[in-house]
Length: 206
Image (cartoon, rainbow, N blue to C red; front, side):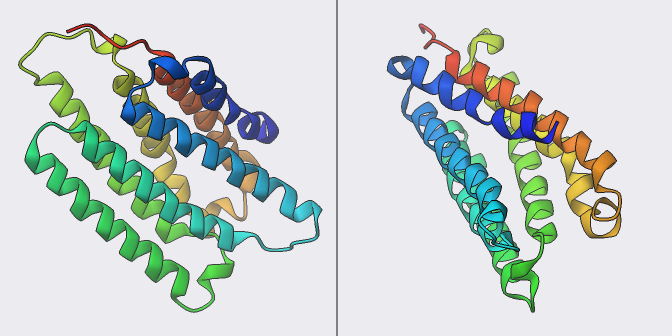
């Protein structure tokens, strides 16, 4: 299941290339993120084979990339000014948490529990706020045909479920990783399917 979860990350990339001519500015940035994400997945997969015993620093670096991309995506997807400001504030707080987690003692060489938990809290909030904006819009839209609806659903699904795994990683998951991490693998596959649907959406006429 772990390999299936890993290679499911290719689905959004394939969808983006297939539907590239229909991608707007935000979706193109989403596509670039998944290309970068695929590179890091490959990096984390290949480094143990090459004899690198600890690749945790790469995960910490990816956390920064996560915030940079998702912060930009949500900032440019919100239409309500206060939500844009909230996005900036939460993104800055997330970066502070990531920096603290990476630079505090030997945490750079361990799984970034604090960083992943912080990201989960921030992205859960941002995704819920996006649904608030979407459902309270003044114009009628078929939300199921909106690319950001599917992308946002994937974000909320993935981080909404896995926040508890990230939060308790050191206490529980690291000791019973096989069974509990299966939850992460399944949610990751489903989230990647939702992201792929987002990148396959055609622009809607207004």
